[in-house]
Length: 240
Length: 304
Image 1 (cartoon, rainbow over the protein chains, first blue to last red):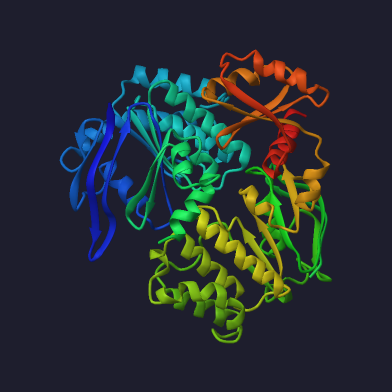
Image 2: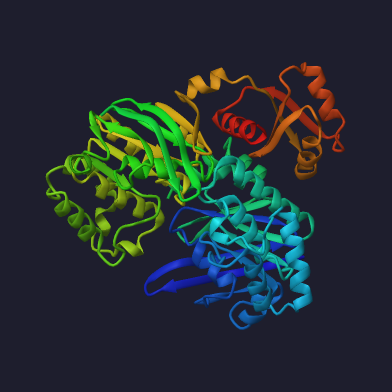
C-alpha cells in the first residue's frame, strides 16, 4: 500500500523549474532515501509533500490526503525533522515534548505518557531540569526525532538528520530509524552520506529537478555497474 | 608555518572543552582534525584563529604566539567557520570585495590562487550569497578565506551539508592550495576526507587520542574485524551486540562490521555468527578502514 503517491509533481519559481514532473510511490513501512546534489530540488519537493508549498502542477497524496487541497490533514499525520533543529534550545527536554504534544492536540495524559517513554528510551536523566541547549548534538538529534514522532505519525520526514555528525553518532541515529521502521512507521530521509543510502529499502536520486534513478540500492548498483552508492551518485550527477 | 600546540586547556564555565592538548602541525601540511561532536575541535580552531584566548597553555604559529601576536597573525590566517558567515544580502562579488578591502588587498592581486575556486562561482557573481546552493556557498566562503593569500588556512567542517560530488571538488581544491605551500588545518565528519589528509589528529572529550598519517594509524590498529551481509540487518545487529566477545557492531553500507575480541580464532568468531537467528548470512574476515578505526578508538574511550 502506498503512503506517498506522486504523479508529475512540478514546481516553478518564475522561469526556473525547481521540481520537474517527478513521479514515485513510497510503500507503508519503507525507509525511502531521497537523494540528490545541492540545488537538485529535494527541499522544494519535500516542502510540497509536507504541505508547506503548493505545487505548480501535478498531484501528490501523503497518508491518503492531497497535498494541494488538504495540507492541514497531512500535517497531523506526519512528523518532520529538519537539519536545523526543530527544538527550542532554551526550553527543557520535558517542556519541548509538552509543547509539540500540545501542538499536535494530545491530551495532558497522553503527553505525560509520551514524555515518560521518550525520557526512558533516551536515558535522559533530569529531563525536567536539562535545557536542550546543554545536550550533546547526538542526543539533540535523537530527541528531535522522538519529538517529531510524539503524535504517532504514519510517516516521518527527515531532512539531513545526520549532517555534520560523527561516524558513531550517525550510526546510532540510524538504529532509531530502523526501530521506527520495524514498528511500521514509514521513513522518508535525505542524506549526503552515501553509505546511509545503502541503509534505505529504496532510494531516488534527483538531478536538476528530475528523478533520474529509482530503486533498491542493490538494483541501482547493478543497473549502473557501480560498486558503491557513492560511485553511482557521482556517475549520475556528473553525466548531466 | 609550523604550528606548536602546548599544554592547551580551555574552559567555558564548568565545562572543560580542551584538556592539556599537545600537538605539532608541520609547515605546508594538509592536516585533519577529527573527533565526535563536543570533542573540542571548534574550540581548538577558534584559539588557533586568534578569536578566543585559551585558559591555559599556548599555541605558536611560526614563532608567533596566538595571543601576543594576534594582530600580526590575523593577516596571515584565513578562517572559514562551521556556520555560513558571509553576508547573505550582499552579492557574491560584493562579499569577496568586502574581505579583500578588510585585508588591504584587491580582487586581482591573488586571483591566480583563488581562480580554481572562484571561476566556478563567477557566473553567479551578481547573485545574493543567501540564494546560493550549499556547495556554492562553501566555495564562496573558501574564496573569501583565501583572498589575502594566507599562510595558514583554518577550515571548520567545510563540507557539512555538501553533496558527494561537490565534496570531491572541494577537496581537489584543497590539494591545489597545499601545492601553493599554504598550511591547511581542516575538521571533517567524513572519514573519506580524513584519508586525504597528510596527517590527522583524533580528539575525544578534549584530549588527543591519536595522531599520525591515516595510513599509519590503520596499520597500527589491531582489530579483529568481520564484514557480514544479512537480509535481517537490524535484528542481526541487535543480536550480535549482545555477545560478550563482540566489542562493537555497526552498519557499513550494505554490510555490518563486527569487531570481536582479538584473542578469538576465526572459527570462534564464525561460531558467534552461526548462533544468530538469521541463518542466511555471509561473513568474511576483513582489514579495517579509517572509519572502523574512528569507531574503535572512540568506543574504547567510551568504555574506558
